[in-house]
Length: 276
Image 1 (cartoon, helix red, strand yellow):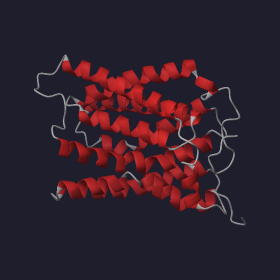
Image 2: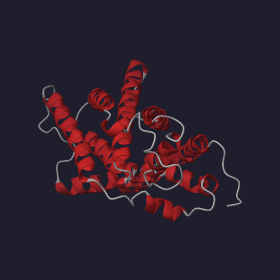
Image 3: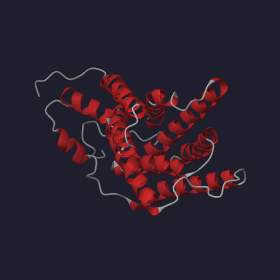
């Protein structure tokens, strides 16, 4: 407990996350250019998604002096999972997925609307998606940074701040799309709207049930569904931005149990995840 506590821990976390991610992402590019097998590329890409967890682990002792990193992780899953919160969040995302399928089907001339056409490929894609962003990013971005900001700001504002920086963290990936000019601007704009809207959903349902399984599941469905649909990437991002934006707006208006603003007693004031 005599260790000096880190000042501006969220700022330090975001900076270190990007510093760790950039060389890892360059390694991903090198693996791609050198023609290594797809599974090696997927493994390296998955490891790069864990940069926020690596950054948080490196800073942990200075953020929470005297606490155990392993115990901190356990605390994130300690609260009993509320199926009502999990199912509601999942149903919202399934509905969005089905709506996008309808939009795409009216414009598609392809035989299949899906990118995965066999069970083996689908199972591989399921685990690849789960083990990268959802499991690799949520401990740092939501388990730490979002909750830390909620000690200072209302949850809605905290979610917008984290959503912005989390979206901007993806900046190097935007340049791999091959889009230029107006297409790049459209993709970037819709991507940020989708990411911030998704973060608002994560914040609302995470505050309803302080168990990290909630944001992990929301993150998983967002990534999983968008990778299932065959279509123009800009269109897919645009549809996601539009529909997740509507969902976030409705959650803000409804504000169930005052989880986004108005309830100052929902945020824990220490490193664990017990609700005050």
